[in-house]
Image (cartoon, rainbow, N blue to C red):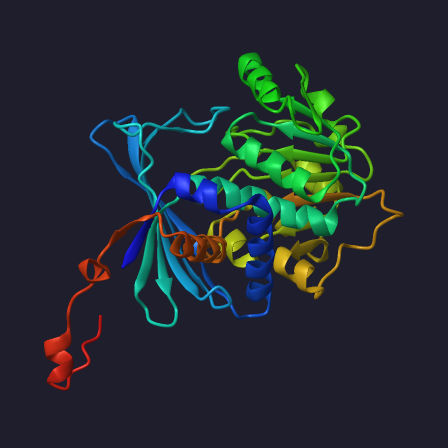
Length: 364
């Protein structure tokens, strides 16, 4: 049988700690040449409404350590903003649903093990990858987090950062006072304090970690505000169809080490916010380190001046191996629990018994 794994199942079955561990394993496998990953593909197609576009978001890859290959397919309608808008184009599906699915395949048998809703895991694996990066690159005693954003991604980023560092205080800013106040109030009973602030400078000032988890299309702070020894994270996903940047050129220039998820995604998705600076000589190629190489020890942070240099992690290249590694954990726990919906696996394949019995091995 093939499982149907809902977003509620993902929330119930996968802890942030497990997801962080899965991200580290996935990126180590990738650096060691074990995992297979193709750069994310996004495309926009014409919509009957001239102000909208059909938008697809596709990942494919395999994590042999997890025993899982996967296809993540997102399908949405986008309400397009005018060029130069400060906000990201918003999702506007006619029905209030996310139609993204992750198909989990067995590497051993090629059979589809599960059809999994992608919404909850998508945000969680971004936060977990941030957590894994911070665990290797942020100061061990980091206690103050500056957070831009008050939505889903900001929430998972906060959960991940507090899972790996002894955070005592969080300053959070978003343009909506109502949203940032509600966000702060939702963490009122945790063992750290979340303070909503009305000035973005207060997010950066005194923070050990500055984390951007927004829908902004333009930088949310100025790189000249940064202080020695800070680690900066951004998740804005720029590609050939849509350019958005949460940090400015000065952040790249001031960073002693720039962490990225993988070079292939940077080049294939035309992440010009970095490549233009490399081409212009404003950023030294040796300062750029792939995450998997940091995890395996093949690369280290660029030589630091007594821990006072700025590290910037550009966490905006989603990889299929993130879904495969975390999906493997979720699938095994769901199978053991036995509470998920099921459909016959045969419904998802073509029966080739007659061909095989006749001695043929049809190709796909």
